[in-house]
Amino acid sequence: MQFTARVISEFLGTFWLTFGGVGSAVLAAAYPQLGIGFLGVALAFGLTVVTMAYAVGHISGAHFNPAITIGVWFGGRISTLDVIPYIIFQVAGAVAAAAVLMVIAQGQPGFEVGSFASNGFGDLSPGHYNLLSCAITEAVLTFFFVLIVMGATSAGAPAGFAPLAIGLTLTLILLVALPVTNASVNPARSTGPAIFAGKAYINQLWLFWAAPIVGGVAAGLLGRLLFRKP
Image (cartoon, rainbow, N blue to C red):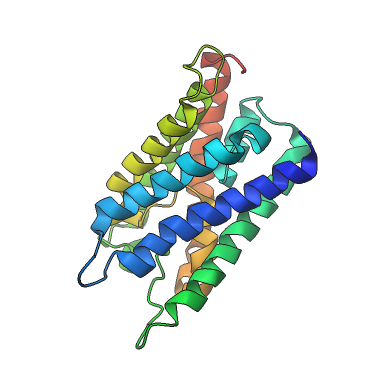
């Protein structure tokens, strides 16, 4: 598939994931009459992946996540030449989505940025979990996320169901990780909101790049042994 179409697809997919997922947390989760809570946010993130994976998965592979891109690269599923461009466009999509959300959110009287659905550990963790707990959570959950991505898209997997499997996996991940880290498993998704949430969240971004990438690399290496290429 043409390179330009692939990177645009990654931009749009990551934009949609961030806009829909983070937007559900910032705009809807705490709304007095219609608050959707943790479950609603988890479902929103999952649905963004399902919908966009069906839309553009045949073009770019529907990574929408640097940890997935790096993981499947280690798994032999993507060209080395695509890795950096994919990551650049993923991060750009997440930042653009966060910027649009900020403009929308500021339209409400009395709006305060707060965490802006950013990820954090220690005092910035929703449940005040420490650095080690958050690092393990992000690495382990990303490991299984990338492993499921590789398995669901491998030769012999049921045809046409990969987006559902991947989207439901992300929903499950958020149900586990929202109280711990506010659920990253995606460095791009973490970067977009953090830019607007401020210095404290930006200072902790390193963990939400490092831990998901470690988990993704481990899954990619194991997936290379377990699964046949599509």
